Amino acid sequence: MKNFKFSTLLMIPVLAVLAACGGGGGGSSTATATLQSITITSSDNATTIAIGAAAKQLTATGRYSDGSSKALASTGGLVWGPSNSTVLQIATNGTVTGKLVGTDTITATQDGVTGKLAITVTAPWGSVVAGGYQTIARKADGNLYSWGENIKGQLGDSTTINRSAPVLVSGGGTSWKQVALGDQFAVAIRTDGTLWAWGYNQDGQLGDGTQINRTAPIQIGKDKDWSLVAAGKAHALAIKTSGALYAWGRNDRGQLGDGTVINRTAPLKIGLLLWSAISAGETHSMAIQRDTNDLYGWGGNSYGQVGNLLKVDVPAPVKIGTLKWTSLSAGAFHTMAITNSGTLYAWGQNTYGQLGNNGSLDLTSPAQIGTDSNWSQVAAGTQHTIGVRNDGTLWSWGANTEGQLGTGGTDVVIPQQIGNGNNWKSVAAGKAHSFALKTDDTLWGWGRNQEGQLGNGQTAAYAPIPVNVPN
Image (cartoon, rainbow, N blue to C red; front, side, top):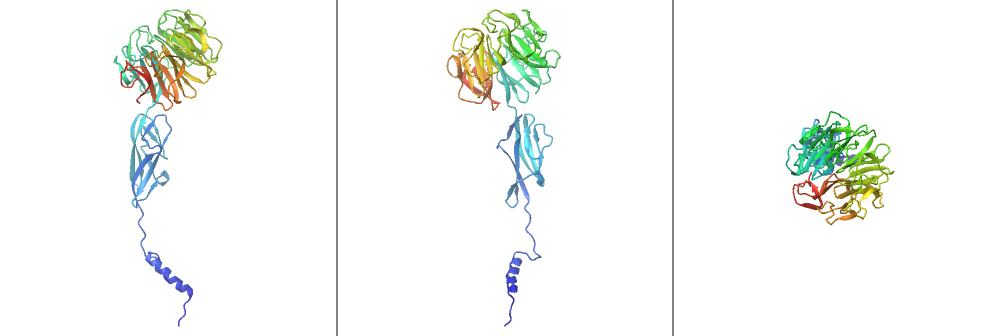
């Protein structure tokens, strides 16, 4: 009998297995799976992005002929596009940001295969002002939109037709920086520092040297160093980048601050002091001095709204008290202001409880409202006041005859919270309507709406609680 070595016996089945598997040389290998399609998804599963918002991460997933799928990357040859979109900006790693309102299609290409996803860029609301029976808001892309009463062309859309939904203010494109709204006129600054105005002009409040109404923005002078504007019932104030103050329009109560009661149809420099904040009421004006944060007032003072302890008109700026201030708002005949420490003060007419001090008597000097020291912004209307605190809560007080407090209730003489939200960031008050922006940049209005000033497409008598203005 022939003997076999143990190692030889082990090799026989191994070779058989290799042959069956195509190994051992001479066999053909399995074909490589090929890319069949590409799907693009976003990190938040949304196909919209707002101008100014954080970049959105896009992911490209490839599906292969063998049924497998995997994420694709630029290191493997993935190319994102388009590279020259005016609407979107896409990076090599798939992050996308909005550049201009509109819609464009993002592409992801690899190995001759392309996936597509349409992305729409929106412009959220950035700021809002309310005056008289109309409203104007600026979007994040720099466009101005207006709605409400328009009998004097105060909406600036080149017509005199009331609007119950936002319409684009004519001219300027996406170049608006700030806007102020008076009773039936508006003044605004473009990003290039030029000054513009439109609407009613009987008292020269447009500042163009005439008394001609304008239904579309008209430039005021040629200067390009304007930084801030404010509008009252029929007069306007503006600060240049230097801090110098200018005023024009009606001056029958000394509201321009030039020491006279003569109307001015073009901007007139007021004094030598430099200013950081301004606000205009029906017949009075208030301002905060730059560097010192001192408060000054002038103009009509029948209710003590200037705050200098008297009820006599003041034709030139006078210093009010010794406190230091950060912001202020002049209503029709009352004034609200916030100190450096976040406390709230009020003075002037109080017939409807608009001062918020639990009374109805006029005050001729600033009086603290409550003990809270967390007020961030305040807006004074004709007979009511709206405020926001640092915790994002929204408050109102004063007259509520047309729902302007947003509480759904009656008049109140102390601050009362509107709802229970804590995501409010800014407020505006008109004659009998109010507006506020939330931290998510949505816009809400309430109060009188007979002229369409709430912008929700309706002209119902009023809205007693906040309603959303569609973007």
